[in-house]
Image (cartoon, rainbow, N blue to C red):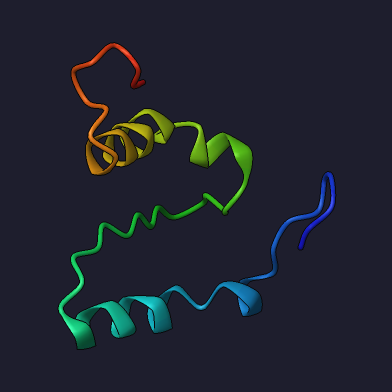
Amino acid sequence: RPGPGRRLPRKELHPHLFEAACAKVGQPLTLRRHPGYDHGYYFISTFIADHLRHHARALGCAGTGNAA
């Protein structure tokens, strides 16, 4: 697990393997890849609201005022 200020090396993420595993079992996936961005805070923060809405819907919280 990375500590403060440490970036995950590309060799540890393997997004292509994750994408292939999801495709193999028919699991829908939205995988965001953008040149020049890593897996750091600033990139993740650009779509965290979408991520929280996804979990709120999955937990049945969407539309109750308890979700992001």
